[in-house]
Length: 225
Image (cartoon, rainbow, N blue to C red; front, side, top):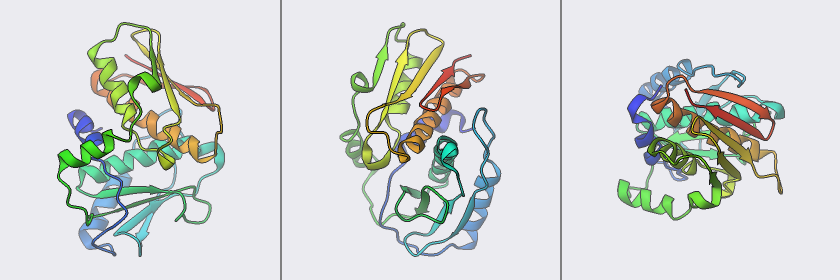
């Protein structure tokens, strides 16, 4: 999907709240339609009908109607869109307050007013992320591939930066992803989908036949193949 770009895109992805351009131009429309047409369907997640439009907050916005039972799917596919936008040079923002009717969150995108260099953006993000020891229990051999995949999950964005997930690795061919059971809010299921997206995309870089298995509504497993 993103091939060898995935780790660079995860590092480049930046949440932005101030945008220069406040309307879609022809090139933007072409890019967004190409991105939305290229969204893969990945089991076990439900395909969603994504729409886009102009925004008075950013250059444009992307959204879909979604029921609560599909919030994990919303986060999973939404983050694929976010990383695709990053690939096209857009800055982005997940936002659950400025949302469309029957949509749990909006994906805003555009060019940022912030001109911080890449190294500074990376430093600022790293200061806000939990350590691997806080979010992961790794009992199997800590291969470089496993650690790189877990690191990709560590960089996933979440509502108010709660990072409400936990990873467990008991064998070298499986990664368990769970949402913390304390104080769960509906929006945290979108967070779960976002982090699964990061883990899966990093996994298929090393293990192209990796699969996602749903254990229950709060936990999933990536089977590395």
